[in-house]
Image 1 (cartoon, helix red, strand yellow):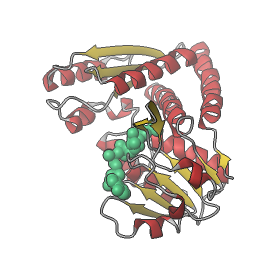
Image 2 (cartoon, rainbow, N blue to C red):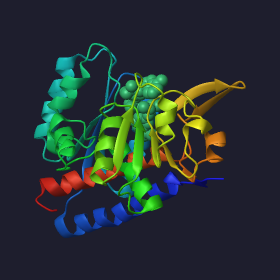
Image 3 (tube, rainbow, N blue to C red):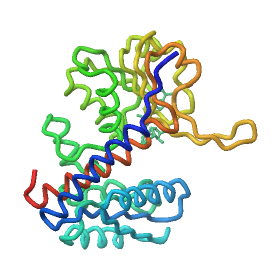
Image 4 (cartoon, rainbow, N blue to C red):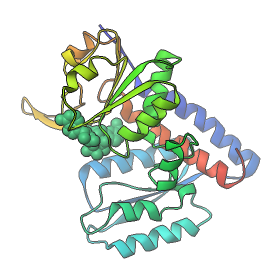
Length: 288
Ligand code: NAD
């Protein structure tokens, strides 16, 4: 039976540490890191994510500013708001909750955010810096997943890591981070042939697909460490359930360690958002 990697406990410990650093920053520099969160529309999942992010800010002593905009908001209106926040010295981090309504081009919005305030790490400057190994603000989900892996395994050097999914927000940055840790990295995706056989070679398997329980026990090498990034809401036995991309029960009979859903990568994503907000505030004030 695999060790269950407790992302919630790890995230709580990280947040405790950040709380101490934030209070020190206030005492020594009269600086309160502040995160502005923008939600456009009424997507229920996005509302939950935003609420959780704001709650975490409050717990840690990070200032939060919420902008809730109508579903009919135009791209120009959103870009104007971003421009104001870019110029506002009291705002250290800007997060625009995705997805955005169809009338708004996500890429234009991401690229309008000042890279120094881009706490999601999605801006071209930040993703380019990560790709060449000069990390600035790193996307929260892969950053949190890497922290869990290093805590579990220590040195990752030489391990074969297989990342399932090639999105710009999870799969690609995850692969870059693992490469920086000297893993041998393979990315597999929707067009990969014989995906099971490739996954079965992995010492570290990261699933970021968005398909409930796609990763079966026969995709996993005995003794592998499995990180399940997926968050999928399904109807099962008349209940609304949250499940990952990994078929948890059977896979946990094969793997050495595995993250659960919920309680694995999810809490780490929010903790790393707090980490990035503090890092951004420090950098903007000439503190390293
Ligand atoms: P995405 O839809 O942008 O990318 C999914 C990737 O999976 C694509 O690159 C695609 O090539 C690949 N894929 C699709 N079908 C496949 C198949 N049959 N076999 C192999 N690969 C396939 O999604 P994303 O934004 O990267 O998110 C992936 C999952 O992670 C989703 O469930 C999302 O909700 C979740 N997520 C969780 C967190 C968190 O905090 N835990 C954060 C971000 C995303």
